[in-house]
Length: 319
Ligand code: NAD
Ligand code: UDP
Image 1 (tube, helix red, strand yellow):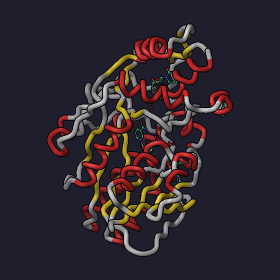
Image 2: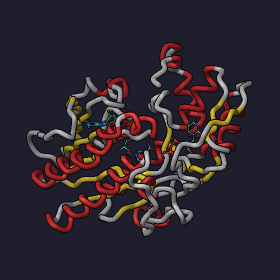
Image 3: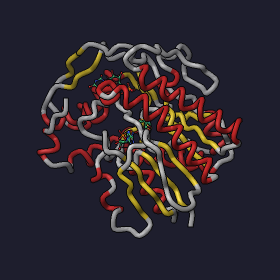
């Protein structure tokens, strides 16, 4: 039986990865320090013989007994609000955490896939973004703690490949949404849906002309699974190229939820990228992958999830 270590297992993407690898017949070790994650995302796995959970901060030495075939390093705050609140931990998990996991991969002769991000492109000057683009990041801006940690993560991962011959995979993940996102994590999908369900106005930052391209979680997990199984060692964009302005997206949520609320405008956060759309030519070529789930369908499923949460969770405020 193949054994996989998934860091960030109690988070949004990590928990869906745990489900997928269990379904594929792997022995799964989930690791998380719960800084932005929640055990309820994986509690349904606790009764399984082939799932183990380690409560551990990956910036500290990581030890896993026995053999290990694969590592998926997904631990990291991922929402701008989270990484602005815990900037040092964000830098540490991308740098020290990645170093620890690369060391573990080397010792176990395991293949490692790291969760990189479209944020390595910063506020991009080319559109759509392909993997050859080097990016436009403000190192000392508020988002720099995340962007530079992820850029360093890619560099050290590639160095472990060239210097130690480690088997590496690099997923550049673009905005992904779906069930198990934290309602109050500040990212736009849970923010708008939460506001609509609570009967609050929807807060669009700036004039809402900035764009994003939203990928449903099942498509994202399929892309990551295929990348891990491939033999391609360079970065691959994984996301949905269907681009929309944030203002139009707010209108879509108003229609979808039937809320009577309106849009209100708030200040645009510093260095908020003005446009973002993945060029997924490489993913199509190398992984024979492209997203299948439309935003209409994905948002419907996501809304169902948020509607199933308790009133207490809906009104819980973190910020
Ligand atoms: P999330 O916040 O839901 O999950 C991250 C998990 O990592 C949490 O459970 C958190 O507790 C855990 N964690 C953080 N620091 C840790 C540490 N030091 N030790 C152990 N665990 C730690 O976020 P997510 O959306 O699931 O993102 C997962 C990964 O994917 C991140 O690396 C993120 O950068 C990357 N990513 C996500 C998106 C997206 O749209 N969701 C886009 C690009 C990249
Ligand atoms: N955004 C918004 N209102 C909100 C939350 C976010 O207008 O309540 C905007 C944000 O400024 C950004 C986009 O939505 O332009 C996506 O933000 P998110 O935090 O989801 O992810 P990002 O792609 O910026 O990392």
